[in-house]
Amino acid sequence: MNLIGTKWKPLILFHLLDGALRSGVLQKKIPGISNKMFTQTVRELEKDGLLTRKVFPVVPPRVEYQLSKRGQSLEDILRRLDAWGSQDGK
Image 1 (cartoon, rainbow, N blue to C red):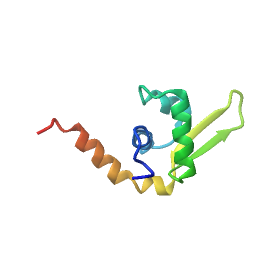
Image 2 (spheres, one colour):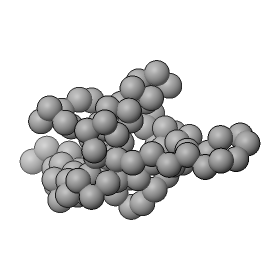
Image 3 (cartoon, helix red, strand yellow):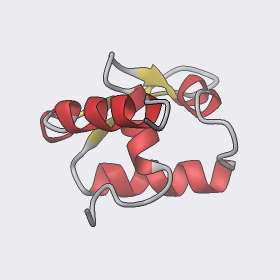
Image 4 (cartoon, one colour):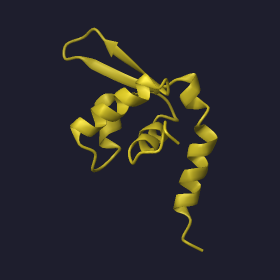
């Protein structure tokens, strides 16, 4: 729980389940997250080995995030959480 037990981490990881996303695209998929919180959260996830960050040497800089092998191991958990949260409360 220490690795994914914050408000934003599961959402970021969930959106990366289907593959790598550019930084801006990923951030837009998460309404309400500030630039500062997004940056802090992806840095923590990278430090914990749950995602990888790839910087492309272009102008303007292009950054992509994707799940690491360790992050991919959370797929079943994240999908179950999504299904549980999508239930109509019955």
